[in-house]
Structures are given as structure tokens and as C-alpha cells.
Length: 97
Image (cartoon, rainbow, N blue to C red; front, side):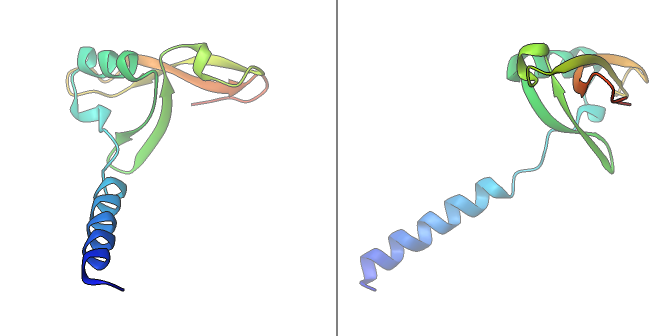
């Protein structure tokens, strides 16, 4: 491999690995209003809901499959143990907690 090509290849790997290493947003460290605004601004997010838990949370049903329904998602935030953050997508028969 040519020296210039090698440098470009290494730079590309560094950029790609930096993007892959980004952590999920932690809703439990935000205030209730911050978490709600974050979900509304992104539309659909996989976020940490606790130190060892995560969930896909959506702003509305348009982010779910057409055969799914939305269920309200309440999560713990920095200022509210039962903040209505957004919604979860669920099959009609499936219970999403």
C-alpha cells in the first residue's frame, strides 16, 4: 500500500471507530422535560433508561411498524421517578413494560 493511501485508510478507520464508540443517551440523567424534548427532537431513540437498561422510545406512532401500537413509556429521570417520556412500539398482544 502506498504511504498516502495507508494514511487515508488509517484516518478512515479512526473516524469510523470513533462514531461506533458513541454511547447511547442516558435519559435517567436528564430532567423530565429534557428527556421529553430529546425524544421529540429525534423521533425515535434507543436510549439508556437506567445504569444497565435501555429501550427504544418514540415520539409517536409514525415511528412504529404499521402493525404495532404505541404504549406510553414512563421512565425515571433526574427529577421525576415516573416521567412520561414518550412511547414504546408494541404488538397488539404484547405487553411492553
